[in-house]
Length: 136
Image 1: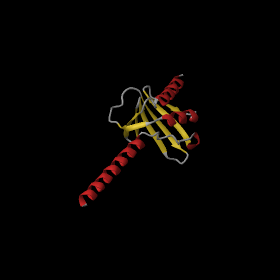
Image 2: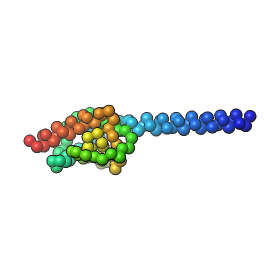
Image 3: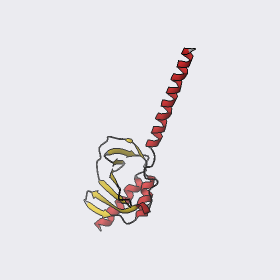
Image 4: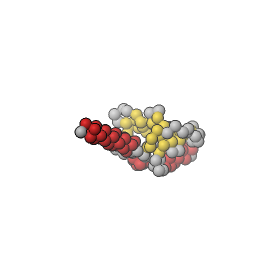
């Protein structure tokens, strides 16, 4: 009788651990900025290197559309190479969002992530279009 209770208790603990692991993983791959709205942004700018241009972002609706699509996966330790951009957003509550972007690799609060399934493509294209505007 005690052995049966012990096995049931053990099975319950294993089931709870499995549930916790699955729910933790699901939360890691969510779009972190899906609830961000243009009205939440006071100012936004991007620093693009190379060539070393600093550009104010006026089209907040386009920026929000790009950020709403962004899905970041688990912490990734790969190196950022190539063109890099630093996106700096000051929200109306004075808090800041700072993203360091190099292709599909995005650093948020000092932690490196990888954008999932091309979800950063719209953001990268938007930043590239700003680079073109700043050069002209």
